[in-house]
Amino acid sequence: MTDTESASPIGRTQRRLLRRIYNGRTVPITADGKPFLTYKDAVKYLEALDADTREAVYEEMKASAKNGKGGTAAS
Image (cartoon, rainbow, N blue to C red; front, side):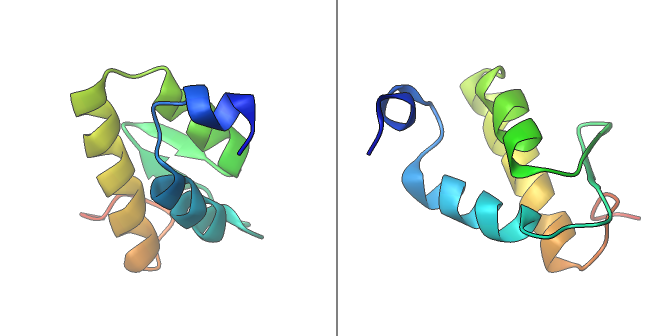
């Protein structure tokens, strides 16, 4: 584990899932009204949020990827 991972508010399990979600993505996932195409962009944004908001946005990203859509889970 690197120093940046140990200092990150995002857990290892969440990071692994985000890497799988964003690996080779060509259509951005929209979460919290913002499009995310890369893992780095998504993690950077999530780390800047408070804990409750971070969890909600993470779940939104996860639901969007599960539904196979680039947009939000509701779209």
